[in-house]
Image (cartoon, rainbow, N blue to C red):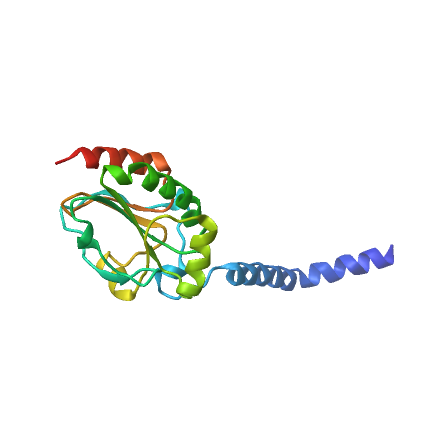
Length: 197
């Protein structure tokens, strides 16, 4: 009985210290589990439920670029004028990006003959050593280029990935999405825009 009273007395005297330690442990655990932001798009990922950008085109031409593809070719967006282009900023480590890729593979296979071009810009910091094996594993059938700070800045800074732009035949951005979108979203736009003159 005396022992229980002694334990209770210890708890009552030190309760504020116990609460402070518990709060410190919780705050520390939250801080340690928080992803570190290096200030680049490749360090961020926007889950579908937190997607914040879904906009119609702003009437501006999509910025042109000249980037090296994984097979060593220089690819320019302007090379695809006259086609509908879906331009996807992504990375191999990003789960929502990986979830979209099988849909992009299928859409490209299905609509390539109708004037549709799928393009991917990888923001992987490991470059070719990260991207080439990934492409082989996933069976990616469309060109992938290695992104740089210049193209990221040209497309508004790319706050999170995947970020995907739908560009019409004349080179204008008609829609932009941040975060995962289902194949039906892109398919609808591809069908509409490939019919335009």
